[in-house]
Image (cartoon, rainbow, N blue to C red):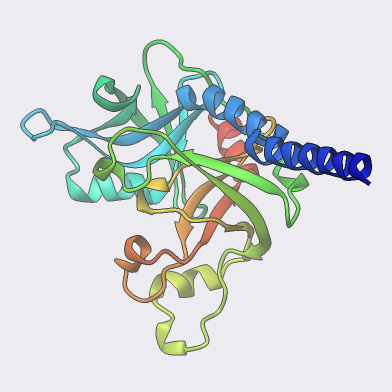
Length: 262
């Protein structure tokens, strides 16, 4: 009996040790994502403006990422429009690097596609590391994704933040409102067009996340670009009580813009 009891105790201790090791050791998926994050961060930039008389002179309100030949930056049209509306005379560009080491590079607005909420910026000077675009038509519901950007912009500084995401639905870009009084002119104009499909994500994003690349956590291939969150109640709720529902424009629309503007 003593020998049997000793054997049982040994097996139990071995099982406990194995369980502890499994829970404490990072999974293969975690390791893959960590490696992908390190690889994509140099290609993800802040999008903002420079005004030398302002304190601080550099300001950014959104995210973008480098694609193509390393001199093209993709972001959201509403990010650029907000910068232009604030001060048309400001110098628009990108912020590279991280934290206090951030540097500003001037960029020319090459394309502003408001229908798909996409903008293409063109840099001068040396190219930056570029991210590759995957085939958005292969994305399926339930697929794991991640996105990296700068949530809340200057409030958190130029420090890359990565969120995991799940593609929860492939849904039309505009869903008719249940109340006709909520149909503003912009929504009505969109309803008159043929709706295109966007990715609905089970993920939390914030205003500064707009323009973040949506990528495969194992390969780093970009399949979309984060462009909006579902807001419950007032606009401020996007920060204080995020809904956990985020939308992304499929990469096929980005590829179309890139091909037209080679």
